[in-house]
Every structure is written in structure tokens, then in C-alpha cells.
Amino acid sequence: MNSPNLDEVDLRLVRALQENARRSNKELAALAGIASSTCSERIRSLVARGVLTGFHAAVDHGLLGRGLEAIIAVRLRPQSHAAVDTFRELVLSLPETLTLFEVTGPNDCLVHVAVGDMHQLRGLILDRLTHLPEVAEVHTSTIYQRTTNHVLEPLDARPPVHGPSKHGERPSRP
Image 1 (cartoon, helix red, strand yellow):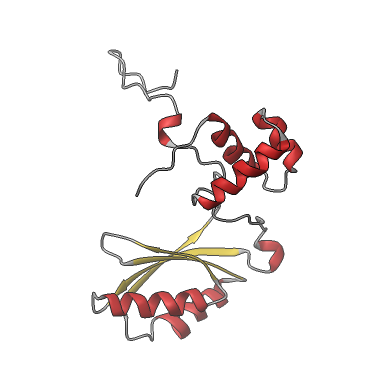
Image 2: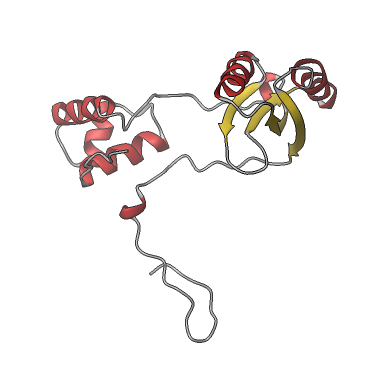
């Protein structure tokens, strides 16, 4: 995948929008040190280049009656595009599904779900997942706490991590 050429102004705008996508164009322009008209054009360009893919509201799942989150690791059978496609379509149609990850390793997919309680989680797994012919095995982990980093910067924009010193100290950032 080609990485879009992002300059310092683009990076400031991306960071500011990740922190708070409801900021006004005027505020964004001030943070980036550019004119409002330039800011609007820069944001349009970031969207057109695929850097900004959407503007979303973060919600408290517990206040929506879905206080229990889990990751369901799923192994599919047979190992085929058709099985993955069928499973993906079904899982993404479930209202409990937050995210579906297709992964390498012993499992084929990780499904992040939010439900009201353990009874609902059990029903989701037993009544709607394990009976599917594509599902060979599931393993479920409930989530005690979810912490999300909403600000993602390009890796090359961060200072390098230094290796351990001669004295065995942990790596640190300058």
C-alpha cells in the first residue's frame, strides 16, 4: 500500500481530528497554523487520499445496555474464501458485533462483541455462532477493561526507540 505524502500540517490536522472530530474548521486552522480556507482544502484532500476514512462518535457501551464486551476467537472450516466470506457476512450483520478481525495463527477470526450480560453472550455463541457449518471451534475471552488510543501517528513521525544500554536499562525515548 502506498503511503500518502503527509507534511507537518497534514499530520497536525490528522492528530487534531483524531483527538476531537467535532472541532470547528476555524479551530483546526488555528491549531495547524493555516488559513481557514486552506484548512478546508487540506481536510478535503486528506479524505480524497483515504487518510481520513470517517468521522465517528465514541459511545459508552455500558450506557447503551451493552456493558459486557468479549473477544471470540473463531476457527473456520473449511479453510476457504467462501467460508470466510460467509462467516464475515453473517457476523457483521449481528447487532452485537463491534469489529471483526481476520487474523493469522491458530484462529481465523477474532470477533469483538458487546452484549448486556453473560447470558446474552452465551446465547450469541451457542445459538448464533457455533451452529454455523463454517465454525469449527470458538474460544471466548471477556474483556475486563478496554483502553483505546484514538490518536495514531505515522511510525516515521516518532523519534526512534533506543536499545538497552550497557547497564541493562529498559529502552527509552529521547
